[in-house]
Image 1 (tube, rainbow, N blue to C red):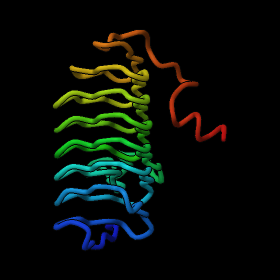
Image 2: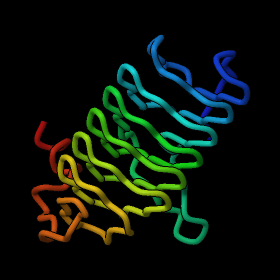
Image 3: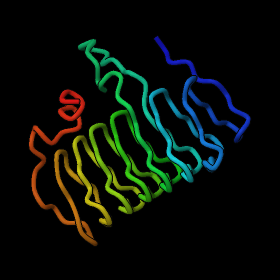
Image 4: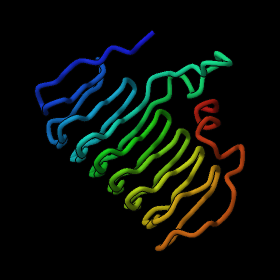
Length: 169
């Protein structure tokens, strides 16, 4: 079952899932796709070709979900999402963060306030980026990074994963 997206007149080629609220002060470039369960804060800038959230996908061989169902993608106030970046379901980007061009933020990742993800950075599942960190290279799965430049601090424990936060709420 495909997810319904509707064209918006706010920018050429902008497709937004029904129910997604775009605050008046959000700046959106052309050719952006925003799926359901994405919450966008005030004064956010989303650059050309970015994709926020992701629909459910099933693996062709196993018929099991590749990505989790029903996750919410949160984009905090004052964030900038760079051109052709991908922020999937169950990711959280805190206020003032800068996500550079061609960046991938995978499910279960948390980007702290005022953090910066440089061009082309790929963040795997379960990453925690500390507030104010400057990430210039890919970050492996379930890692806590912080500092400028960002350095590996430790592994993310099971009880620190976003999936666990949702279960305890």
